[in-house]
Length: 232
Image (spheres, helix red, strand yellow):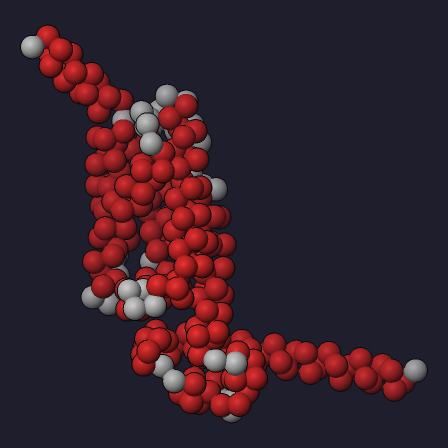
């Protein structure tokens, strides 16, 4: 009985050790890929960063492309967990659409796009997306595409309530994200970030522009234009 318990204990310790090594390798690979890009990174450098042997990296991931894909998937999983938690705070039946959508936009930028993981993914896509599109297909499907669909459903709910006037919910979701991320994207491109005050101003301007296209005032303006053209 004792030998069986010892064997189980040894197996558990081995499993924990293997998991710890995988975490070390993934963290090190993320650092190296972010610094060097996919083409510039090498297994030897990743192994040195993780303080493991080159063979250990190959034993776990076999090749650099497999390791890169694993890094993107792990980071994407963390980003999505935070993202969908943030989406759950989307205004339900807002009394002040400008104010509440702006507050949501701040949370979306600060907690998702502006995090270290968010910046990491954005930098990798900018560096390597054009050269290795197949490496980012899973990210595209599970990241931006899933986000757009979820946000489109939320805008559809507001539109059905009469708070917004939207014909194409997917288009509106993409436009909202583009407006909200515009200033952050420029800051990240040059290795910077936005202060809390800058985030609030950026979010307010983004939502104001969005509501000019999809709010009731925009709808009234379009109706007046149509009426004027019809009379002419």
